Image (cartoon, rainbow, N blue to C red; front, side, top):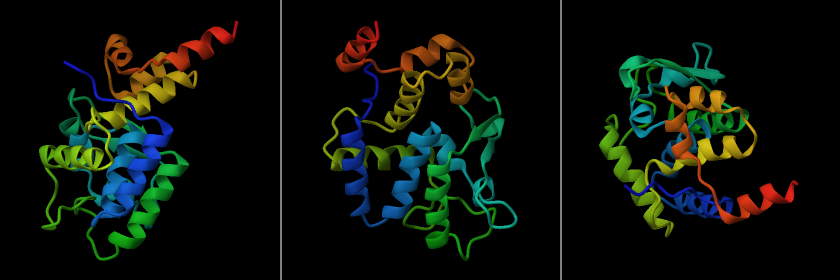
Length: 189
C-alpha cells in the first residue's frame, strides 16, 4: 500500500492558501493544523470536543488528553500543543466557539453535527486535491509531523510516544526521506 505524501513547506503554504478560500476555511484550517502540528489521526480529530482544547477559564490548553476510546490502539495518550497550534485554536475559538457548550464537538459539519472519522477523512482528501496535491491523504499531516520531528533530531522514543505507537518500527515507516535530506546528511561529514 502506497504511503500518504508528505508535503514540502511550499506545498503546505499552498494548501493553507486554498483552504483560506474555502467556505469553512477556519474549521478546515484547524483540522489540518491538528493533523500537521499535533500528529493526530482523523478519528482523533473528529472525536475532539471543545473542553478537550479549552479549559474552564476559556484558555487554550497546553496539552490534551486523548482517551483510549478514541485512539487507534486503544491506549490513552497526552498530546502537547505547541504555541503555533494554540494560536490556531485561539483564532478558531474566537470565531466559532462563543456560543457552544464545552461538550459540543470541536469541529462541526455544515449541518452542525459532529464529523465521523470517514467524513473528515473525505474532507481532508478533497482539500488536498483542491490544492493539486496528488497522493496526499488524511494521513499526510501525521506523516509530516513525524518526519519533521525525526529530521529535527528528536529522539525516536519521544517521536514514538508522541505518535501513540507501541513499536518503533511503526514510527519508522512514517518517516519520509528525500534526496535533499540524504545530501544534507552526508554534507555534515
